[in-house]
Length: 468
Ligand code: MN
Ligand code: MN
Figure 1 (cartoon, rainbow, N blue to C red):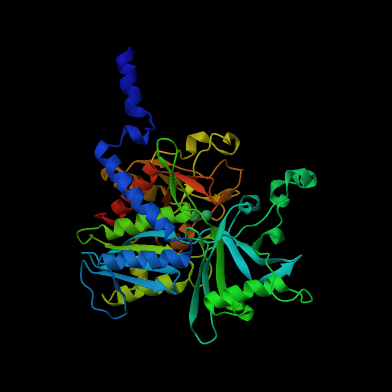
Figure 2: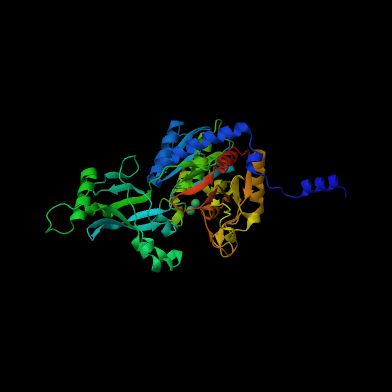
């Protein structure tokens, strides 16, 4: 076999993974930068699921989306959305084909790991006031100490009204912090395993140190803090019982790297896919063939349970109502539907090669990562998409010029994780995981590559614009 023949055969038969920047045109690189600038603005407005839902609705309404009401007359090309309790959003662009031909779905989640306040959070110890927290989602606790934190959320009052809390986000505002031991006294802590070095009960937010009242009084700093909260929000300590207050990193999204090829921010998981799905839907010019639906779900990080999670009947109700308008049953619609479970995946990190299996891992700048299965301990907790579904997506992406790669969540026995994929597949919807590879996933500050963000947007568009 001569050299040319060999090279030809190699090209014909073997996979060659191509770097995204060798495939992306100059024109597309400009579009990518524009897209990522919009994404950073979206992130800064979306520090919690409630804020993210509100921002998504604001963007949707600006593009002509209207609040959906069951029984509403809808025709091809119409744009509607529904909001579930302020924390999850479902949007639909009505397609040319009837709903018994199925819908094209993209499901992402908009909740991110963080520190929630406990129902009885406020206390004073040694003339310092604190809020007690209970972490939400899988965090590495040691990462959340000694970083500036902001507090967001709502306090629901007995009269049915709601107070919005926002502290530490604006320039010049005070921040909150969780302290850590100094190295000089850290000898014993240093010897503990990482997971135990910072116990959950020490994740207490420092709120203040200035007392009020006479020196004979007790709890003076706590009272001073409560007085500040009362002045600003009109609430009393009891009201904190019915509140959802979340401490999140007080950082803004920014470019990372001298070449600005990356974005660092809190909450890429999974707002990076949520934004891609949302933007792709909003950018559809023509009515799609099949009805295109984007779901931005809550509670993924704690198992997708609850009324606003992907297991909630709220999603079925929304689609069922749309189906009822066309005299179609939900089950016949689901049976022909396709869902891209749009969630982030672990990017190969050369600093930690031991936990990755390089041949099947997604790498930064190689595009959106397709994940046939997630799960742990032998694919447990994964929907494990069938070969036909993967082939369908390969074709869809290749035809649309989407840069994509294969992805797995680390070495077989290294750990694992899940997404909303199984909850969609359990509904008899063909489902495949795909999303942006992330470095330091679930950390207060995660990193993604701009190219992968943009390709994920293109991937979502390909799903919504699919002809079959
Ligand atoms: Mn996720
Ligand atoms: Mn996650």
